[in-house]
Length: 458
Image (cartoon, rainbow, N blue to C red):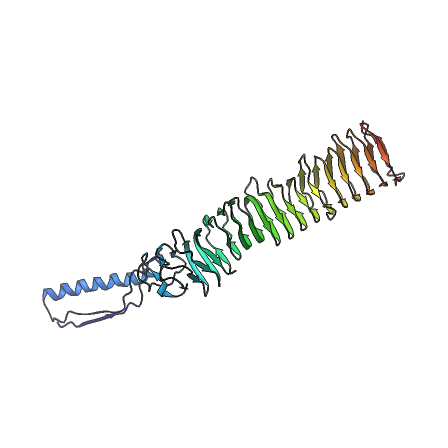
């Protein structure tokens, strides 16, 4: 029996994963034209097996992917120019432009002269970026966005960064960003939401790091290392811990909302905030030795010490605010303090409130160790206010209370008032540990049904 098998198999591209290992462009098989014989039958059998194997590879080729490293070569150029990408360090160019699964490396073989620039002329993507060992002080020009899908990036000390395009880290696994120990300037940097992923930023030990808005999605712990100065265009943190945020200046708005990983959420030390700041967590949080030049809103419990607030302080309903600094926080003449419904304000140490202070209904005000109120003190309904410890309390503005308040002075020091108005159904207790002086009027607005009670604290 005559058999004429003419097989023409065209494999356009076979991608074997992280490496574009090879491309098969034409496999032409013409075999077995013998009419009979054992040899012909054996050859037919093996050729059919080979074709079956190739068919399986074609079916699987699109779903198997392994990482490949792309090496930059040939000095200055565009990220999207294949002439600058090699499969080996210092090798010939011509490799494909990196894709999401590819690591990229810039090293001693990448730049043979000074003043060289790698320009991202269109959106770029890679898994990992590493500039370790690079020579001749090159520049990465971020003219367009860069997305890094893997474990992070490492920038060398002897390189610079220009441009303000955004860098996005999209991995849901742990990410580390090493920024080196020399001054650099970036645009916006974002770590996309990664659920329980940890984010680590290693910043310069002494030099200044400048960037646009730093955004961190829902994550586990966010650790920012490095004692050098940091200048941020703004900060936006989702769910997760921040340990610590220190030695920096934020010129734009700050939002933080942590809701459930336990421990210290917002560790702030030695920061200057020049924009609006909104902080909300569900764990113990601490603000130390910082300055707020924009309005500060606290959406959950915070401890604050040796901090200066030069704008309004708003404490949301049901929030606990604690200040235990013996040296005191500084509240400037521009600072208006407002406690929301049911909020608690625990304040010890010697402090001065230079502007008005308002506690809304059901708030709790616990003041210890002597305070000065430079502006008015206004209490809503059913407010509890206690003034205890040692030291003098000075009220340079008027005190006005709503109904059903419970106000107790038990401090061992003097209490000096201007005008005081006490609402119906309230109780006011004077301290027996010192002298109370009213420079103006002391008015009670009690009724037969809701009298005002004036007592001592013992």
